[in-house]
Image (cartoon, rainbow, N blue to C red; front, top):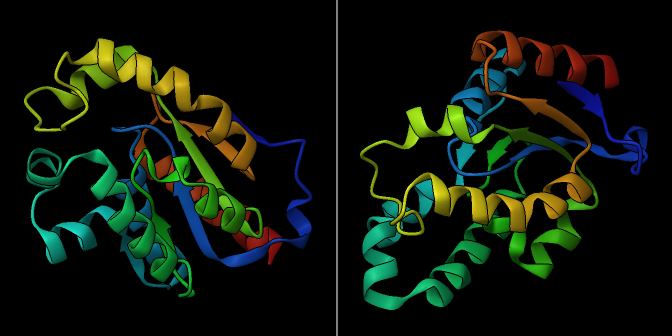
Length: 178
């Protein structure tokens, strides 16, 4: 499923940074990299920046807790949103009120995925919020879904379609708007 959201005037939004949001394992990084290549702009993954600066996210959660992680995540997101690039946010970055306010002025691509597809993608991962696997994923997604939908300029479901095709559609959509 692909659709422009009806609640936002997407013509007035800045094209860059182009921001990817969505639940864990929706494909934000993989698709975001392809879109950045297609548009000829840099790709920024906020989770990778956090890991480079502070160490593995699972260790940050274990050592300092989720509240501390969200503070450093907010700082990294604010920096990332300054560059003309494609930016992939961690699944929970949209929980921050300042991030929500900033995203209101940006073009935001919401990638969703269903639980059956996620089960294949998260097997064996060390994601700190997924101790109980898909059940935790579904609970978190259900809580965050209204925010993803409210912040989105456009939505793509990544459950069953090839990521290359989705990336091409996003590139075409961005080019038509520019």
